[in-house]
Length: 190
Image 1 (cartoon, rainbow, N blue to C red):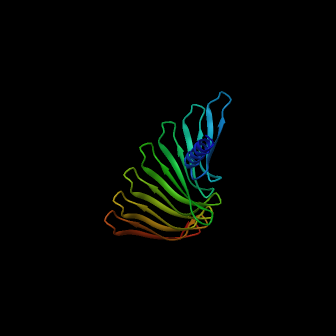
Image 2: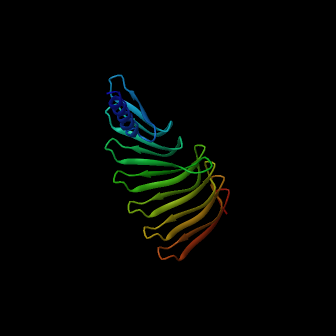
Image 3: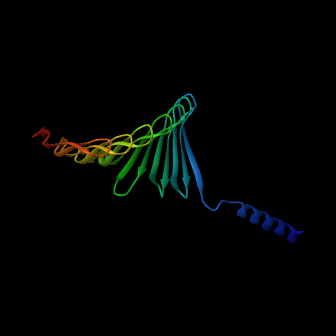
């Protein structure tokens, strides 16, 4: 009888242990005063892995994915559930921001450092073609800029320096022929 109890106890312990997950998972939730879900956090192995925020109507507003406890990608949603924006964490405190229209088409893509535009900033037409690229440095227009025809051919080509057009400003035809060339210095036509 004692052998049978020891055997059953051992069997139950083995079944209980084998049914445990191999990684620790947990979650936390917050609520609006009316009881509607406001946010929820998910944890894996003691580190946050995902966070979701909801509006008072219960619709998902944003979702953030983490890697090793650090945010990697955040997505923001419209009230109809469509993706409105996305922020991807890059190296050296740099983020890539992408914005989308109601149909899901990318409208803008740019990079930021410490909350300021830094690097190439591109806007797109409804068909997905780049229509303008400008360059920022610590939140100030600084570097090459281009506008494009719907075909992708360069229409205007110029540079910014400290937020002002500076240097040669070129205008092209839809076929790529140079139509005009001007020179600017600190925003002033020369």
